[in-house]
Image (cartoon, rainbow, N blue to C red; front, side):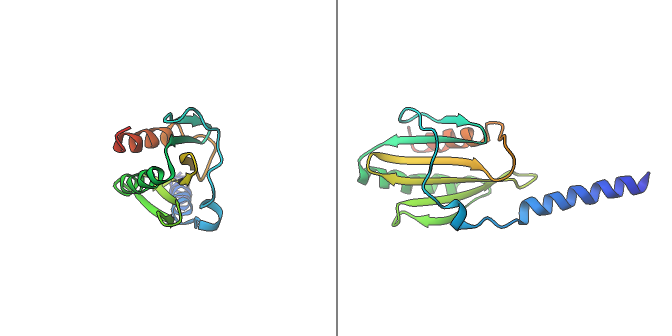
Length: 143
């Protein structure tokens, strides 16, 4: 019986290590956001992620991207994966507290505004985590 418990612990630790240590390649994830876009200013939950688009002129969209970057980096366990305001596209990784599951969020300045797409790295269902994060960042923007 003890060996079963030990084997179970090893499986869980191995899974945790896999989730935390699997590389997230910028070339694969730092791409133009493609999602189902809802009305401007509305977070749209979807299976495994969420989307948001904010209407703005290009200069204002760039200011929104800079402000969103600050809000993202102020979020616990969130770091920038790639991009900058200079390129007009930034991708962040946010990890869950216990397991360290990574969610990837990409924001891009376009002609008509700022487009943001947040999605999970592993699995199929995020239980609304990405939509809640985008709503929090939207609130941080004062919108």
